[in-house]
Length: 229
Image (cartoon, rainbow, N blue to C red; front, top):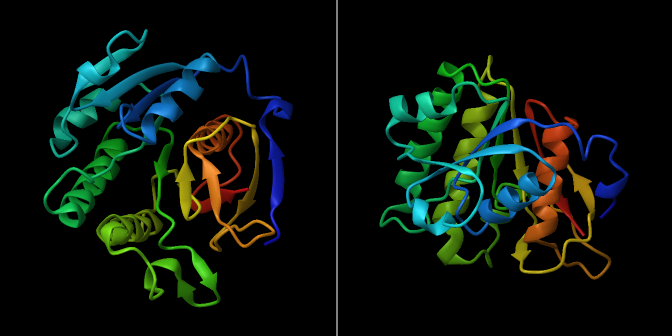
């Protein structure tokens, strides 16, 4: 599928623009690569997590906060230049309900804390595979990921209804995989990005590159975008 090719190393904003960032879910599968990318570029990161021990040994401020405790979350988000949410409900018994409640709390906390910008890790399920058909609604969508994908789709609806919050959602391709950081990826909007073999994928490291690129040089304020190889 057509897309814009981006090489992170050529981004003039990629180094030297120190920013104070609050990263929700910094110890998770997606959050940890984002944390590492942000730190490598010299940003000052506050890691907001439920299990601080997972980040032991890192030179980063850590705040233990339950995202469902909106007042505590709001206080943790204050005085940050941006918030990145890599919030996930994978470990919860009712993933969909927990995710939706958590995202609602994050959105409200970000607004009350007067955060200039909220960037959200989205899902691939709400991306179109053809006009009018989203990946989540195709017959072969994996059942084990359905609740999370539906939660992310609802979160996108919530964000699109916001009138005051400056938000961006970055939806991954169909597969987020362990792999090298190349710094090169392609950008799409609401359509799944696939390569010449019809595969939709990106490494966790390059997804993190795309997220921090967007943080440093905003191109998708108040809208969703996606990336892939």
